[in-house]
Image 1 (cartoon, rainbow, N blue to C red):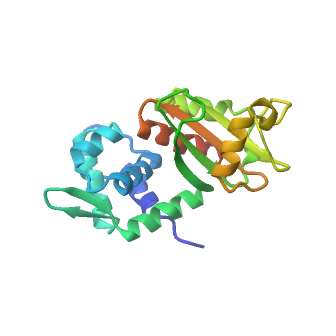
Image 2: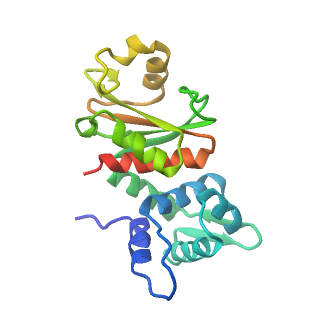
Length: 213
């Protein structure tokens, strides 16, 4: 059996770390999001990273120390840190273990619910989607404005609970998504909207996790 991603190891160790005082929750999606932010915006300092993660500076400092100890990030004096090649590989391994084939900022945002929209394609997850309400609720908990879940069945995108395929309901959205992603039978797409890019991405990660397993 393949060993779990080192990012998952960081999240697991965080839950059991020693020390006095209240424990700050650090779900695995936050660890993945930290890696994504560092990958996209690095070199980035801990103050800026803490703001984007919506976490305290002390928490982010400890998180960076854990990531650095495993060779996942590299510090650059006076500049911040960057994600190493190992860090990039471990991030992709973690996303793959969740079934996330693609995670992408959509430009322009096709739903126009927020300034930023991020889509996650989850491999073979259509059978686990009910009406998309669980994904929407998870996205809203994280701070998103909303989420739309679609499934790819018989070569067509479908909104769960809607009888007509998306190409009949919204031809432009169907065309945009099918040309943007390499969809396979049974895939699910979750599009999360927010006025902050990284909130939209965290929402996409959190929503995707409702379809794992």
